[in-house]
Length: 449
Ligand SMILES: [Mn+2]
Image (cartoon, rainbow, N blue to C red; front, side, top):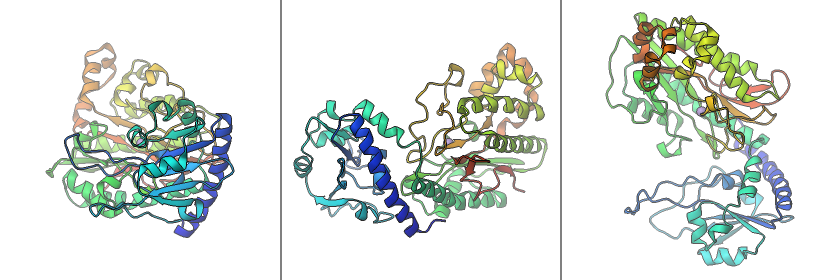
């Protein structure tokens, strides 16, 4: 764990570096000020008087670890950035407490009360660029044509793909925080049969997070629910069955940076439990092999293709596929069992920007990382095998379905699926990856009883 004071020192270095990098982008795009809006509160519906908690604009979070609506950061070359901080005068609401006050050492902080003060401070010449939510910028009188200039925003996004030591420390700390939740769920699942809602609440308590604070809605799936890739409509009843599985895809944050971690567990007796255990162990071993296969300069999409070849091996070893490995990949069998991408870049956003500037091949439609592996990147590696009726039924009816042992598939389909996901930092050297997740959670998947 990095102590808060050490994190604060890294943060001030991060801001100093960000100033230099912004200045070079601004010079390239002939911009003499960038004004970043922190984000505005969104109503739960147009007819409500209630708002969702703020999810700050990521460009803002890149500079400021503060979740306060309608603030601004003004960045100009050669000057200390100014943080325009809105004074909250409402006696109904107050923003959440910040994790740190180190931003006070990084910026000139100017409190303000209404938007007119922002406009008069910012000016708004032709060479001022505004970045942020369109609603928030419109409330400041920014013309839509002046908001979020595409090429400038793309250049600022690109700055986020290579993480600074501060960002890595935050991502590592977020993974450390997630560990408590995964440990608690593994142990709770081992000891008793609980509803998905109960397990979700156990995760929140163990990680001391409120539901809206998690980096993404926890995916907590018991049994066949794991076949819904984003299962977040939690079951309220605990079922007692001979064999049971639990897939948990849940993280934590540190100063806005996200951990994204998936673990899969199985317990119980009988042939289905034994077969599923083999599948779970196979995916865990494959995930570790894929992490070990990453090389600086190699294409991530090639790693995704390798994951399909290895998925065919795991399916064959588990007795689910009877055809040749090449045939299982070429005929689309592995795509029916493993339909999503191998991973995505990670940072202030769970699906972070900057690593999918190229479209993937059409057969890899859902792949969110198409870059070449570069020192400084952080991305996930998360293979999975699922029993998704909407994908398997068409396969069963097609000629390629002859290469699948449907009796074996039907026997373990009620256990839903398996995914194992770690967060990786490309450090270069040998091995070139630091596994931010396994340094806290060495086990990826397996039997708990
Ligand atoms: Mn993920």
